[in-house]
Length: 89
Image (cartoon, rainbow, N blue to C red; front, top):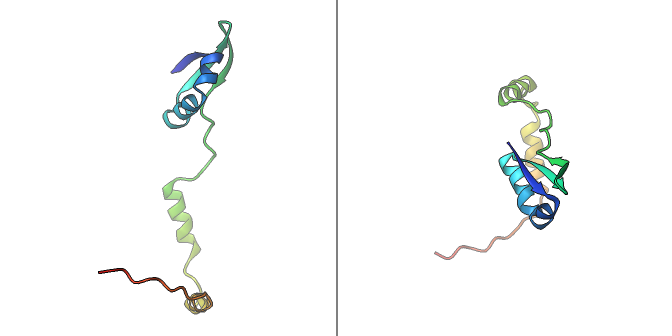
């Protein structure tokens, strides 16, 4: 569905129009002096992968090597200690 809107209305309500385009997928035809001059519409979504494809790709990765846990422990031990205040009871 396309909504006709004047250039003046667009200028006054730009934030609202952009929100309607982004969150509701609405399309607007901008008119100047009664003539259509532009169409505002959501951008096409970038190509992506489905959840099923992601799961399949993750399954193909395999498990980390034998030293992975040791590496994580070394990284954690190298982090500075942060003292957190005690929560009142």
